[in-house]
Length: 268
Image 1 (cartoon, rainbow, N blue to C red):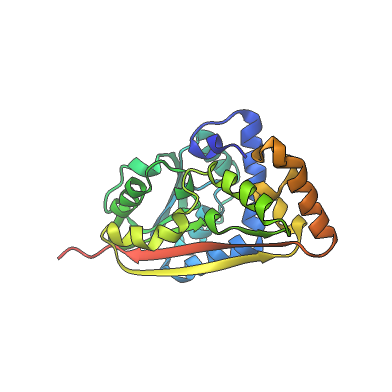
Image 2 (tube, rainbow, N blue to C red; image 1 turned 30 degrees about the vertical axis):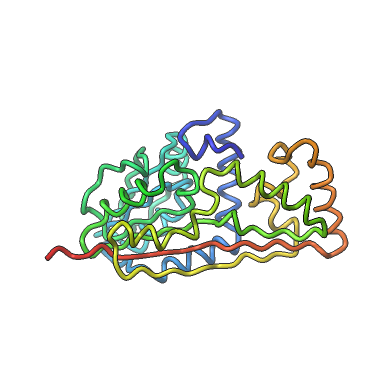
């Protein structure tokens, strides 16, 4: 999976692959559970003004539109114009939904100030150069008393048990170098506090799977179709070991998804 798609540019083939990947991830039980956990921390009610940053294919934008109702509003933004178009193409509104506006914007410089009751940013910070600037921008977008919610995957805590610790360490360490911010998920709560938000809460949803098929489509380093993520010298051994462990019923993958939410103080 090319990082260019999530950093604002892509070829048509990369975009198509990204859309397939995002659609698969959105249906995975772990992501569904993480999203449900995050929504439980938030107050999205009829009339709410919601900002979905890094909207991808817009699943959460559409969900928030139903929650906010016709008196609310949803602004869905993404850095990649093709992704904004894809989200808009998938949007089918019901009469009771809030209007969703789709816009192109960079998380580090959103240009909003004190506008939204809820600001949502899911699996975006792992792709940015400057997470501090991004969280600051998200915090500025929230209205006084509004909430900011961050979700991300901790790639640095990805565990794969193949019975070959040296091979596993080499492959996973090399994969982390391909992600701009592989461990940003564990810093979400701290970053919200540093941005001046209060009442920060954090949750973790732990992905655990013993089926290679279950996770190969959503964790790129386990997907043989994305073999170029693995160094050529380790490639055959890595994917053969994955398949062998799965066949023997010995495959294990585990990884946390962190959710953090906090509130912008009300003005005195």
